[in-house]
Image 1 (cartoon, rainbow, N blue to C red):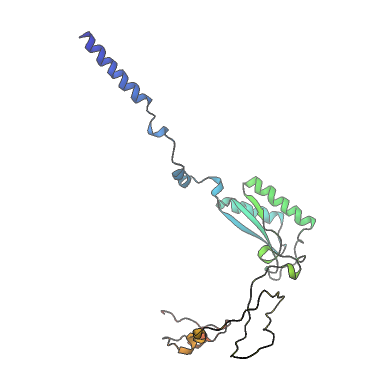
Image 2: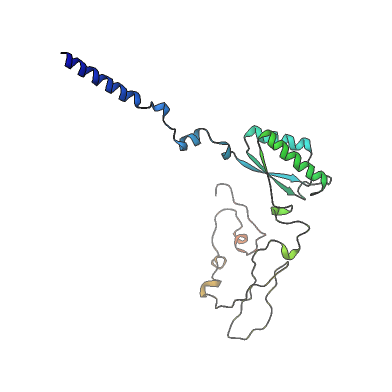
Length: 216
C-alpha cells in the first residue's frame, strides 16, 4: 500500500507540473495582423495634401489647419504651393522670401508639437513641377501627334501640321492605312432612343457634348 500511494502521488505531481509549465492562452504572442487591424500603428495614419493658396496664409491659420488635422487623425501633411486659384484675393507672401521661410518653419514646429509630420512638394508651380525659373525647354512634356492622309501612288513633299506650343520632333512614320481605318461609327448613323442629340457624340469635336436623359 505504501508503494502504491507513493506512485499515485508522483503521478499527480507530474501532471500538475506539466500543466503549470503550459503558458495560459492570454500570455501567448498576439497575431500581428489582427493587432494591426484592431489597433493600427501610428505609421498607418492617413496623409493629405496641404495647399498654400497664392501665399495667403498666416501663422494663426497654419496652426488652426494643423490642429484640425490632428483632431481627425491625419498623420502627415504635404505642403503644395498653388498660384492663381484663390480668386481676387490680394497677393500674399512671396515664395522663398524670408517671411515665407518663417511660415514654413512655424508649420514644422507646430507639426512637431501636434504629432503631424510635414512634407513638401518638389517646387512651386502647377503639378508641383515648375516655376518661373524653369525655361520652356525644361518643362514637363507629353507626346502629341499630327497626321496627313494621302492617296497613292504618289510622291509627297511637305510639312506635317505642327501642334501648338514648343515641339521637338521624335519621329516621322509612314504606313499603309488599314482598310477598316475609315470605317467609323459615325458613318453607320447609330440610332439612339431618347432626347440625346446623338450627332454630337460622333462629330469628332471634343468640345461638344450632349445631355443624357434621366432614366436612360
